[in-house]
Image (cartoon, helix red, strand yellow):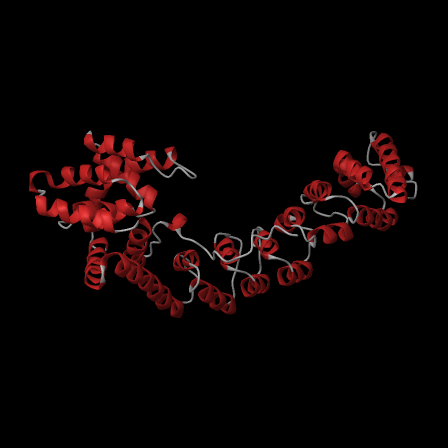
Length: 396
């Protein structure tokens, strides 16, 4: 590579860094001539930071030759070394373009992912090419980029599976065209997680909303009929829908908001609420505000819907919410005792016990989703499955 003139030098540390780079380049060239792939991989693993960090300080005439050298090196090193190099390249605003493109096209998602998910030096043409020809894992990586214009999301929707669609819908930087929304509706017919996320989008074209409601109702009906039979399914679905739509006085809901704030700050990530024994203890101590706030938070339901389910004269919707959370019978029984007291007849207790026993947790979640969706809520969102048939994109 050409020597720099004094005017090109960025600072007093430059001669030492440039000497290190020149020495490293010499060793790389020697390793390439030797064909020793283990040596090549070790050089990259040990020096990936230096190789990428010095790129911006190279004079423009030197950059194409250095980029070509890196492309040759990356074509021969092992997966771990390529991954290490890709991770160093990904944050660069302007990196070696040929090398970045080669690694972004890598057949192994572990190598390509850091670049596809966030590297700003990849153009839309390259991303569109990988979205079309890459695997499911490559598309999921692209779907995580902080900004995705409609032409690119159109391509990802068209070539991707349900998990790609879910990732796009979870990405606030993804924008969709009319064609993209139509493609997402097609995915929603196969993936419940897509249906629920689409229902939450304020920019979804209005003509698509009836399709989502129909899909959600059909899933709930099919599951309920399998568990309860035709008559029981229709009756419970109507009861839950009517109950969750009831208004509840704001002063009643206000009693629970402080508890919801505490629950929301305390239980995050995979731990959406207290465990069953803790929840049962709260209820038995008459900490109803804490208990219902925890149930609302864990189920992803608005607080008023949970309160109105507790207040309702028929306890079946409340039982379905608890069953959707997969809480055992003692938790539900404790709630029923606090709600109905001496008025909890043996017949009502037996009816709810039978419902609890026959209703599978997945069926209960579909029931509550269907009842809540007309009010703009997607309950149990984290429990909805995307396309189970999609490839994991792990590469060869």
